[in-house]
Amino acid sequence: MVNNRTDIERLEKESKEIREFLIESISRTGGHLAPNLGVVELTQVLHEVFESPKDKILFDVGHQSYVHKILTGRKDRFSTLRKRNGLGPFMDPKESEHDPFITGHAGSALSAGAGIALANPDSKVIVVIGDASISNGHSLEALNYVGGKIKNLIIVLNDNEMSIGKNVGSLSRFFGRLMISSTYMNIREDIRVVIKKIKFGKKVTEVLERVENSLKQFFLPLSISEELGYKFLGVIDGHNIEELLECFEKANSMEGPVFVHIKTQKGKGYQFAEENKEKFHGISPFDLETGSVDSGDKNYSTVFGDKILKMAEEDSDIYAISAAMVKGTGLSKFYEKYPDRCIDVGIAEGHSVTFAGGLAISGKKPYVAIYSTFLQRAYSQLIHDISLQNLPVRFIVDRAGIVGEDGKTHQGIYDIGFFNQIPNYLVIAPTTGKELEEVLKFSKDYEKGPIAIRFPRGKAFEIDGDTSFELGKWRVLKNGEKNLFIATGSMVKEIMSIEKGLEELGIDGTVVSAATIKPLDESFLLSETKKYDNIFVLEEGYENNGFGSAVLEFLNKNNICKKVVKVALDSGYIPHGTREEIMVENGLRGKKLMDRIEVNINAEKQ
Image (cartoon, rainbow, N blue to C red; front, side, top):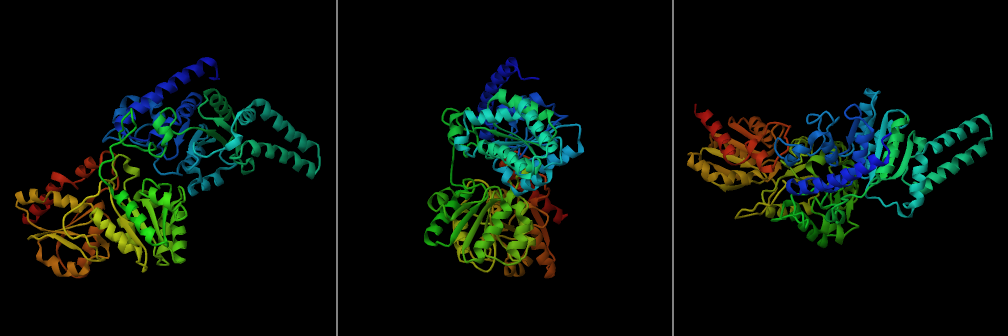
């Protein structure tokens, strides 16, 4: 038993120190501050009661695992958080033996935890999952399977958003503590034994069972019914160390599966994070005194958000759909002005896609705004529910390409590949902020099928000249000889920025802005490519099955024998670091991009 006054006072002192450390450290590195401030006491108690790494502690999504990292020997490396070759943003077995499974996307921890628990019957497996993540379909599938089966699994619901209303208070806390007491557990089992031995009759037995369930549901409206095979403990104050210790010591001694419901405050201990939980969920480096972040110029998400709002003001058939990322995808203003037409479905990407299909087949104009990495979760729905019926759903693929600090679980590098192979989709990668606006304007009345509009994380790039958009038509930005550079999306900026450097190396060429990835500008490829010695296709995505592959296949089918160099990401494993570092490291920016081009041209000459 660690539940004594000395332990409690020690842990309370340490929790204060950990909060101070997190706030100060993350103000310099950026990261997920609010979620971690909310789980300080919980994580401390888990490490007091359980023995990691023998016992396995998983944090769903993993953005609230910073305290876990601190308590497992990684505090001295916290200045490297989210930096190249530094601590990762989420849990990763390659980083520490205390991280039993990689995390990054919501909903995976319960399924993984069930598998780990089944394979390690002599260990306790503890899964901490948030009130938003547990509603994810993946989590619900796992809950359905686990109930009554996995005896060494403990599920901790970290409830930091839902209001329990009047049920939270002294009575609720008293009843919650009563339910985890040995007295209550023993009395309950004694009553059940008596009921079985003395055949009261069906009606009396049902009444007694209903009394117990009614009491629990009155005080604990968010409890998981024991009829599903769980032993329920809670609701516990997630910042009360004494209650947490008592609860998890009991959970550790029980045969499960055990479901523990705790209530925490996201952002606890830092005023600005408490007041603006969404902003401080994941934040760039910020000023400690003011909580402010340098916002800089307009980014692509903001350009989208402003334009879609203007369009929605003029067209009442426009709907916007987000999967728990209203602010991140630029939809905040739309949500405030048209709450009936801006729908946040929660962490349910598959549902968002099919839901949009239902709107589209009914004559509405849905826009589904999701980060590229999360849209992967709806691959089946993109095919079955949208493509097969050729429904005009507009997909806003935000954070396409390199995202930087969030690392390998969040890089948006697969969307070109999977949209290219699904029939009926248009795939468009606007070059500039102005071109994005033109593409959105085009998409509003396009009813022939679905559209994927992808753009990167970061500030909107602009170039002089024509910004008009025509489907399937590319624009020549610069005329030259010998070399043809076909760039899509963000890579137009990259090739234009090294234009003078290439000229100094004696490398001339034509630069083409290819906003339309699918369909290709076939007339251009048929008429122009024969003029050049080398064709470079530049994209911020995974090389396999990407834009370059599509160009190469088209030329091959039309018997145009030309060297095509695909300038893209040659690996699906892209670690964390700044966007600048990762772009350079993979030969997509600056001198490294120049070197990559020069090497291929010189190889042709040899």
